[in-house]
Image (cartoon, rainbow, N blue to C red; front, side):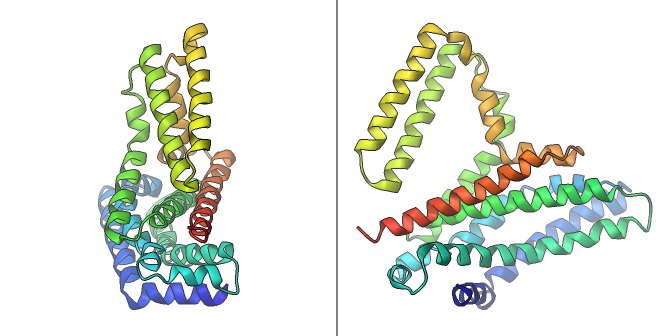
Length: 287
């Protein structure tokens, strides 16, 4: 497991991908830190973290696009299935390697609030709480990007799809407030989400019958709710979207609200997509 971790970490250094991504991140963070905190004299560094969260949309696809797509393209993914370590350990090692590169840039941000303490009072508890949430949100995005990379052998497709998914997730909280609230429209949107989920399930298992079964049962349940309890759908989808939104949870930390449940939520997202990545790689053993 350690050998896989070192090999993957070295690939980020030798290919310059790690240096470029970290440098890009620190340049953006430095500019916003100067404008928001040093020049405008705001002591709240967590506002700067919130302002630069858009960088993940660009940074994460670049860092994760090759992590498994390149293995699949060069057919070296077959070595993963015959390696003396389990697939789970290989995927975890790869994830830890890309997280290490990511953390290298995040660690530098720890010194920015200390710089501000020389010029005024800084609530370090709130600031470092927001930094922790910022770190976990990025770690969750990395897990999502790695999962998408495992689905294709093209780095370009992996990067583009990851970019679009993260872009949607970034604006998910804002889009929730723009959705129609009528029960019929909410029912149709829930149905669409259900069948998209069934399509993703089909991609994972390559067996059409379980997704169809789940979709039919879910569609019957949604239809019965709409028929006999339509009030259930009134503005329901907006609440569901906000609950799943990673950026909305980070906003709570920026506002000084430390939710332990949100920390566990980020860890759950990381574990879920690492698990899904393992299942995708394992499935190719039988293809």
